[in-house]
Length: 82
Image (cartoon, rainbow, N blue to C red):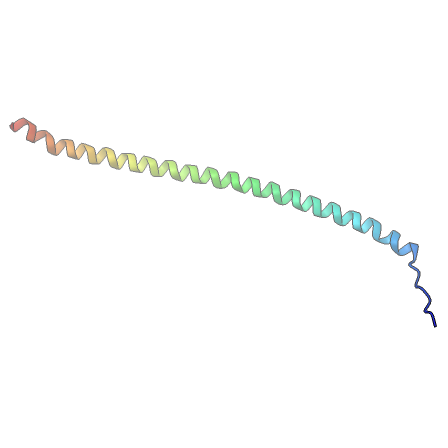
């Protein structure tokens, strides 16, 4: 006994075609949007990092300048006595 083959309706295939195309377009647009947001966030993070690094460098330079002035201030009276 042979079972009859089930035939696929051409209407079913036609109904999934536009849905598959819409899905593919949605995936592509979602990936493009995710890439754009990732690049934007990376630029923002880099700008923030550079700002913080520059501030830290200025603070460090000011500290070094103050330390050197104090050393010179302490060493200068010793030179006068000699």
